[in-house]
Image 1: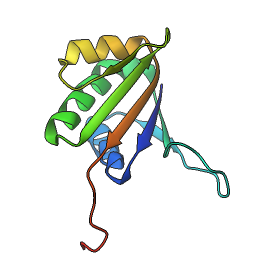
Image 2 (image 1 turned 60 degrees about the horizontal axis):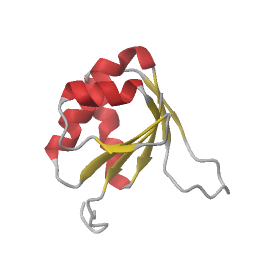
Image 3 (image 1 turned 90 degrees about the vertical axis):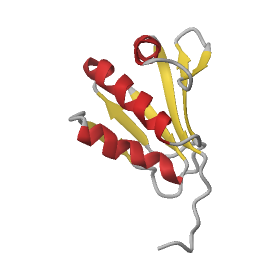
Image 4 (image 1 turned 180 degrees about the vertical axis):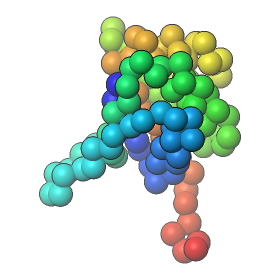
Length: 110
C-alpha cells in the first residue's frame, strides 16, 4: 500500500506508524522532478488493521489533519468522521491514500 504525504506536518504520521510497530519505506522525491504530492510511503498490506488504528488516532489529534482514500472504483472518501472498522474497510479497497496536515507551520518557530 502506498500512502502519499502532503504538507509539512503529514510526516508526523510516520512516528505513529513506528510507535505502532508498523514498518514502512519512504520513497523521497527525485531531485529535479516536479511532483504534485510529497513523499510516498510504502506499507505492508498485511498491517491494514494497525494502519487503520493509527490513521484514526492521527486525524483525531488535530482538526487540520485529513486522510483521503480513493478506492479502486474511483470513489473518494475522507477518513475523518469514520470509526476504525470503516477506515480499515476503506483501506482494503484502496487504490491510493493521501495524508494531509493543513496546519500552517510557522517557519520562524524553533
